Length: 272
View 1 (cartoon, one colour):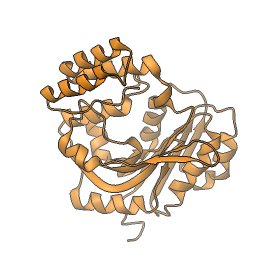
View 2 (view 1 turned 180 degrees about the vertical axis):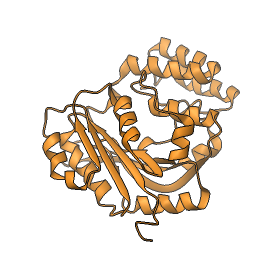
View 3 (view 1 turned 45 degrees about the horizontal axis):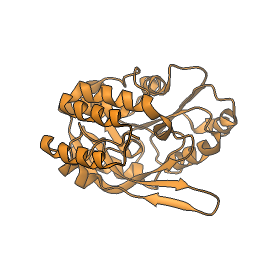
């Protein structure tokens, strides 16, 4: 398929002081060798080597910027505002795409049309120079059996959608810092957007000491509670009870998961 006939794919990478990982992220995108790619990097004014790394590849970028922004969600929104692609996604600067993913997503788009497409992911944690911990996912089963209002089983770096979906669902909520991707997916579900789960692993999700989701603590939990309250107050009540206990691996947590069955779910979103 020639680049003239290929759907344009726009990828936004938001970044801030992730120079140690950024080049691997960039290469995982450019290494797709997809002919009709629009790659945009939105850097929040990094003080490490990030800008020099970006400049190394700027001839292959559609746009890049480094300076103060309104946070990660705002940076992603700005990137999508500048984009012109038919298929969209964002890839954080500590994650990577698996090989051949863009051609694969185009085929899915041509088969099913406007939708959110989400696949599996390989989560990895470089414990030290010798040890690596990895785990996979099963989003196809999760999509069949779990409730998105209870657990965010869509793995963000393994998700793509069309421009029509983005325009229908509107921009990311910039008031959220930790859960804006989950809230956006929940909003799409409420708006009747089609979802297609894919068994193929589409990305590598890096877990490290500075990883935002793992370092959010109580602030993240409070934000997740806010999202629960927006979309299902019954889940919010249960989640708040769990927060009050301040113990996440206790017998109470096991009871909590059993209680979730009464509202058609067996698992809750990863709150810690």
